[in-house]
Image 1 (cartoon, one colour):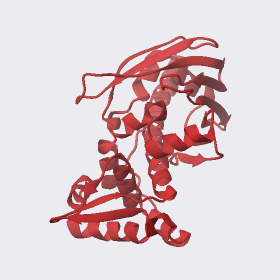
Image 2 (cartoon, chains in turn red, cyan):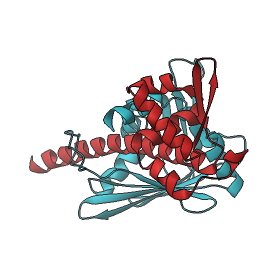
Image 3 (cartoon, chains in turn purple, red):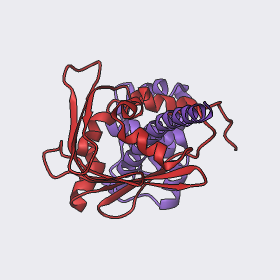
Length: 118
Length: 172
């Protein structure tokens, strides 16, 4: 398939510059989804989501297929799509984790400050 | 284009960075606002560890965690999800525990040899740079992790990431 030829890198990177579009790749890394499902998940209008999907599709990161009235999106075959989805998901996972760690550390700091004073 | 401070729990810290640094290595870095000894304590004291390893946004809950945090000691962690009665186990051994600078552990829950995770803590001016380095046994193992998201059980976790992705979109 033509999809196997990766799109020019600048187009791909432009597509990846947007947090929502990276989020869409993460989501599609889990399972295929319709545009309306994506719009709902990202609390966005159908039209807004369609625009993002078109950008991803033109970059070869996503492929879509219309069955009946529903257009299903799936991760493109390019390595970049899968790798981006994974790396972004992993990063978000660690970021949430680090936020929580930082809160615990902050608490320890405050406890030390209080203990130090008494 | 500056992000608006949303009144986070602590002074603003730049987000984590993640990168595949070689065929077999994947690295996540982030700074934590606090000295290395406290970051290390939060990491190695099981009661504290339980409070941050599985943030609410994962959609999964930490069911149990036991760890003997010293060189040669082992750990076992179980996570659960409301939609499943089965728990996801994660387990392995500590290869190195060096306070307050370094932790190395194995990830043995997969069918095949898992990654070895090294975490280093580097303090400068009261801020600690944390580097989480996953070293996979082969290039194929990391490729496989990326393609299927399944090695080390992360794939199963990612399927629970809907809530997190929603947060990402809403906050974006």
